Image 1 (tube, rainbow, N blue to C red):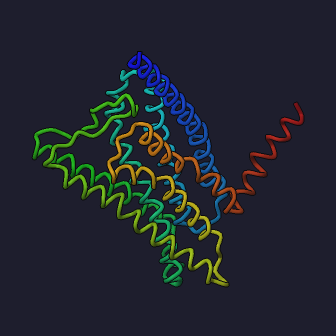
Image 2 (image 1 turned 90 degrees about the vertical axis):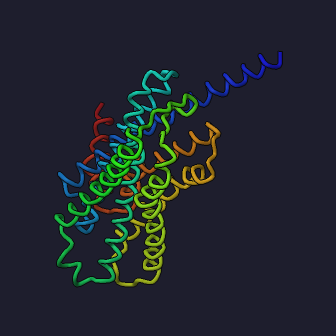
Length: 302
């Protein structure tokens, strides 16, 4: 009787957790894709984000990265959680490395925005001559190249040392995702790469955010719009990845806690359009005049 009660309670908990995951992933997708697509259109077509050129290009890069996370990470996880069975495990196993890959690009992008802004403040004369869209595109390209090379190095080394690639092939139904299978020979290299493309950029982001906050408080004549935007973007990024970093460091294996931790990272993929609306005057004016007001007029006409 006790075993039956325990099994029923476990099934109920599993159903509830699965329902919460379906709802959360659905909400993320509904906001992530339209929101970041709107940012891209506003920036590239209408030039509605009037910040310095490098920051604008990196904002566009962040929007592309966030949409990629929605389509390549959140959507497969949503499908697997809806089905409740590992029939999509091969797809998720293939896309699994994209979680680390795209997260690294996202973190590096925010770090680069902060560092770029700090250098423009510290070296204003040089910044006026060098801060172009082309330079911003070079920075964005270098971020993707860095992450690609880091993962390629890991996989090539894995092929040489173990005779096979390292893949996310351990599908875990409780987590609705795949975990990486790496040999002990590759452990140190994996830690080194994660530190290089994720941990170290997070440390730099924390330090640069604090520096920018000090500048905002002390500066009198400096334009603060872009600085405030970057501070809020950085704080949201750090907050969204805080729980998963704690879980990974302490190797917590509770499925519910892991699902919450992984789910909170998706907040970073939907937050930026809202941040720009409240901190970038030109973007807010664009949304008000071109999107919100026409939509309101159409509703009244109907």
